[in-house]
Amino acid sequence: MKFPRPIPVTEIAGKIQAEIIGDNRLEATGINEIHQVENGDISFVDVEKYYKKALESQATIILIDKKTACPKGKVLLVCQTPFEAFNELVKEYRPIQPLTASIAPTAEIHPDAVVEVGAVVGHHVKIGKNAHIQANAVIGDYSIIGENAIIQSNSVVGSDAFYYKKTEEGFVKWRSGGRVIIENDVEIGAGCTICKGVTGDTVIGAGTKLDCQIQIGHDVKIGKNCLIAAQVGIAGNTRIGDWVTLYGQVGIAQNLNIGDRVIVGAKSGVSKDLEGGKTYFGYPAAEARTIYREMAALRHLPEFFANYYK
Image (cartoon, rainbow, N blue to C red; front, side):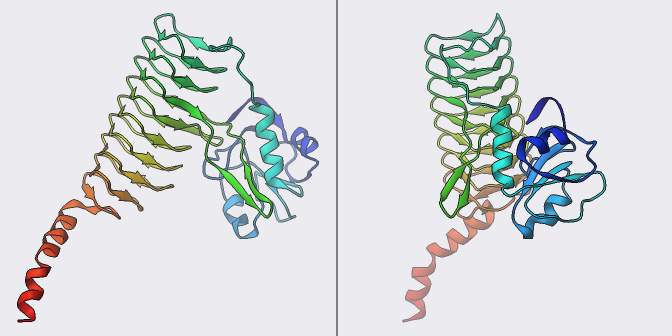
């Protein structure tokens, strides 16, 4: 998530009542959780075993709960509750804006796009040339819809990320400050749900086609010209390459990398990275030819044991 203007670190420290360690001349250009950080971003850490990962990340400004040595070119902001400070900053720059009309006045819709009656278009949405948003589709705040994209009825683009911090009192919701970017020539079937990024972007690559009733988690990146069949679920922060085919009811776990031109057979469960250019099947998914040989062998087990115990 990028800020509308660079923010001096001294200004941020004042907002969250933090002590500055390091270069107080630095400025923040954005804010992201640790999986998404870039140079100029604010991130946070509040568990000591993750200090090293945070301090060595691309983040320029790190909210932290204890004093520690600050790496060169960074600044630490020491505060009691880094997560709460982080969440409040996201809320400040991505506040909840209730809609008072079906199409927000801040939405930018190309004159050649079609938005049917009953569709809902949120704040700061951009819809490109020849895009078609069908009745009862919902396009959430800050989403970007490319040229020639089709969003069918009852799909939701830009729902909140399913992302919570566990505390002793219960689960605290992260404010979803990210976006969904639907690139050119994408088609999204009816009844799909695509979560926005926590603080980054969920991206559906150009030319990709989604069937009905598909769930795409937060911060997922799907490549170009993929085919995804009905009832597929892709968990948060997973990367999928170009020309990937996922057949019906495939489930993919979080934080994985799926290579280019992978094919995954129906009802498979993917729990680890998949190398590109291969076909996979099963639960857990493995190379299809290996699984098929195993299945063939299993079919012969009754005959084998019958002969063995004669």
